[in-house]
Image (cartoon, rainbow, N blue to C red):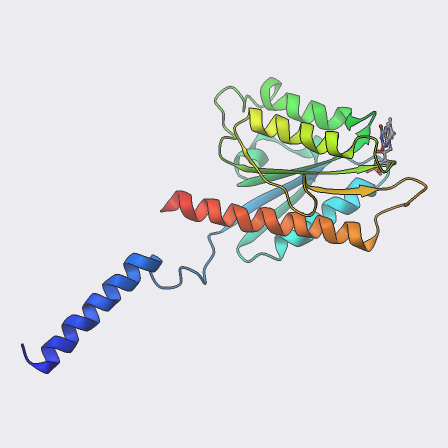
Length: 203
Ligand SMILES: Cc1cc2nc3c(=O)[nH]c(=O)nc-3n(C[C@H](O)[C@H](O)[C@H](O)COP(=O)(O)O)c2cc1C
């Protein structure tokens, strides 16, 4: 083989190796399109502000479409067309509010999602606001994550250890910048992880 032929063979081999290792040109540059549903209940606006922060964080991840809705406005189609669902609740008597619980109950009673495990392998995460420093925010996030686990979703944290949370009572009224940043961080982590899952599932 002359020098020209040799270089041609080397070129073809190196292009083949690059494709095999990296999955083709643009693999790292083009994240797969994903849809993240951020849904919440909020009576007095605190959880809604956190939801906005979560949505902003997710929007910052390239390739992510964010849908932001109150739990009462979510239809089965919203859940089925999402790759990830992030649920936020105010703490009501140490747990998620009745509206958020009804939302999850409807996954069986109204939407028939649980029966065929239609939420299986979608990404899930939680956020919460509570009036007191320690009166149920972590329980609220963990019970949201429990409902997702029972539906065979893949739950992740971000911001805080169990998701994002804020204290809103007299000791620390409203959502401060640190809490808003935690909400954005949760949205970002979920969107990033969802892209990883989607890329893996299409290979
Ligand atoms: C019925 C009810 C029960 C509540 N129970 C708790 C509680 O157990 N622990 C807590 O920290 N805050 C509790 N709160 C306060 C709310 O969790 C807090 O004000 C929250 O930020 C409200 O969120 P929102 O503004 O999105 O409605 C309760 C509020 C209501 C209305």
